[in-house]
Length: 279
Image 1 (tube, helix red, strand yellow):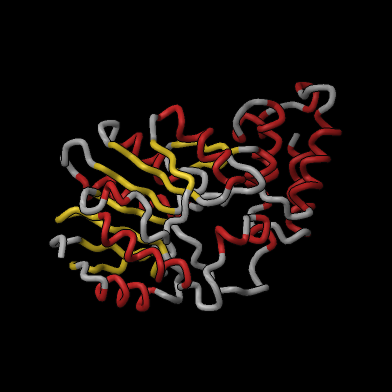
Image 2 (cartoon, helix red, strand yellow; image 1 turned 90 degrees about the vertical axis):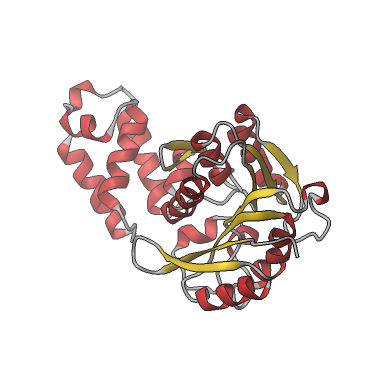
């Protein structure tokens, strides 16, 4: 089995895949129905009859830079496994930090009302629903394709899913001034053509935020501001080049304690703030 995995890893490395060893082992484990560590210990005689053919096909798909998560049909997000595929943004590990910050900041606040704008696969809403089973959570998504995955991941949790535009000034008007937390991972990447091929497999409307990356964030902040209750928290992920711009807009919207947070790589990644009043 070692030789099979070695050849697959070399194929993926030659194709420019960022994590060839991880992906080669994960795809083998996926086919066999076990974990990557067990795969490494298996004998070729233990493999299913169709393994070599099926594995070669999966390695070829990955070598052509089809996202690993699309091949698997799932993506990890903290302790969760989300259903994903073409048409929905694949959640990234950096967003786990934002979701965890919100869960931690809510503390012992009873029955919080949480609104997740641009929810996509529902990753943040799912994370918070598991962290706070007592929460009343709304998840907003515009894309019909993405909403298929939103429903798959969130319907079992009782999250209220809204098909709508997070920048709509009338969105969820009945919740104005009531939200304990408004959280968002919006489209924020500046338009560019030099990203990894896997990024372009995500729907462009979920990735790119105009030439500066700020188009959606700029129009979304007023929505968050009007939905927040006094003492409510706002958390917004952003591109590593636009942190100061997001901080400035959030402060100008009247939110306080505006704080810039870094991701695990030390890059500015999300901004948080507190709503002090309903003014």
